[in-house]
Length: 488
Image (cartoon, rainbow, N blue to C red; front, side, top):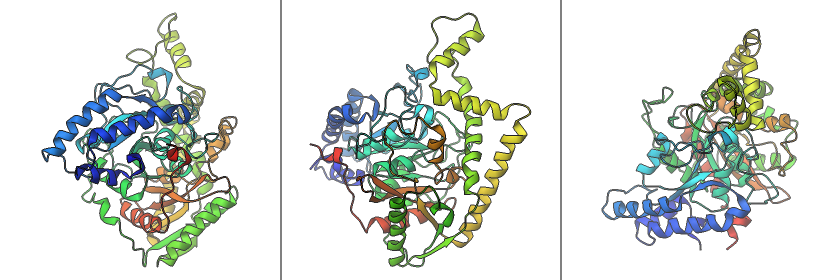
């Protein structure tokens, strides 16, 4: 049995007990990457030398009792939009092809302090803009369940790496569902925490009011454990929140008696694949059998979430991405005539089509004459969506629904129609607009054997509710390894 087929917590226990050395675990992960990368393409950068060196350091600290946490010695992959000192951080874009940061993102630093060993950086949609991991400048990542299909996005590389068992767990970032949707497509578990729980310092920004870092792993126990390690107050991030209770693992109890679960009728209408609907409602039934009170209700405003999200996210992106201009770092065009021409040519050559589309859309909605008509209206809609959730959480502990309307589409099917790709985020983006926590975990498979994900949404700072409900549901089924993971 491969060490990478264990959960992160199980592997951590074996390392702690001395049954396995850190070097053995890291070497096995690196070998798995070497063997499977041609097929799956989840990594942009692999730091073999650095990981093995770090493995020896961590082993010493475990042996002398300095490191005692559950993740000490466990190999991890990091999404390529989180800064790592001295290691390439490209956001899967040509414009940052040679960027090596001089500092490390706070969330990654927290993991290093917990003793996790970084293997490398995972592929993603360029600047996290996309839902399929096809917009990367470094090629397409494939779904470990069926390599003709996408892994989802934008954290597709992280989710595919976990599903292909090339690492024990990974970090992703979620702006509009970028952890939960690929977790659903790849048959793994991912959490998007409440906005402000995990520091965004060192996360290269897409939509600053929406972005949040979170864990991707095989099960709920892993995700709760990792979230505990990366969550912290950070004065370097002005949106970071000081939270007293970060003991997420205490919610890992198989007990949902009396828990009120709301199912939005709006999430089960037109456009939802019948097989996805059946699997998600089947999961709700299992929770009901365990003693939860399950009710359907009207959430409303769902249809306005997508336009509001894309106006706000693109506006923030056009502002955030203005810093990539070829002057200070990254790609610069070779031939240019004057400063303005250098800016224009550098950005035209350095950014991919999807990123350019969103920058232009963002610049348009922020321009005079359109600011009030689009951007301010979107902000008002965002406030109404938050209010609708507040009213729902006055009645329910958890909201249950699908993570995505379908299972993973075929490679190439979404890029031809960007609007269709945007509509695929319908169940996830409201969570980011309202700053809420959400979790996606496997709840079945379709007729083609592709995973289906269940999404549980909680009120602000109530991660424990979704962890408890997810853990209770998870006890009703066992983890299924992807076909690529089972290839020896």
